Length: 121
Image (tube, rainbow, N blue to C red; front, side, top):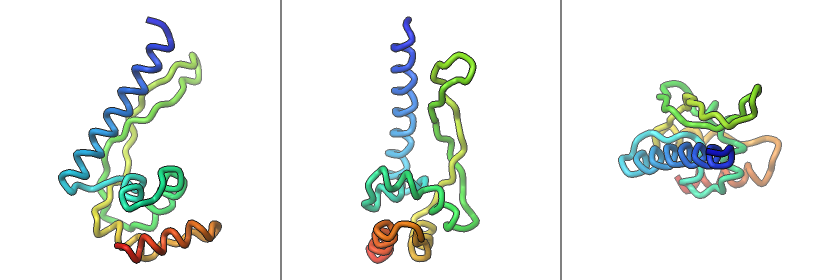
C-alpha cells in the first residue's frame, strides 16, 4: 500500500463517518453541531465553518457532545491521522435562541446573514 492510497482511505473514512452521523441526526431530529445546523438553515459551508466556533459560544449551557472525526498530519512522520474530537451538539431550540442574539461585529455581511437566519427561524 502506498501513501496516496492510505491518505485517500483515511479521508473517505472520516467523511463517511461524519456524513452518516449528520444524516442520522437530521433524520431523527437529534442535536446537531453548530456548523451543520448553520448549513442546514441556509448558510454556505465556508461561512458556517468560519463562524461556528463563535456561534457555539453564544448558545449557552446545557449542550451535549458528539464525537467528530478530523484529519490531522502527524508532526513526526507527516502521515494523515484520524483523530476523534468531542464537538458540542445543539437542539433546534438552542440554535434558535443563539440565532436571536448572535451578530458578528467584524463582518457586516455576515451580521446581516445571521439576522436573516434569525427571522427565518
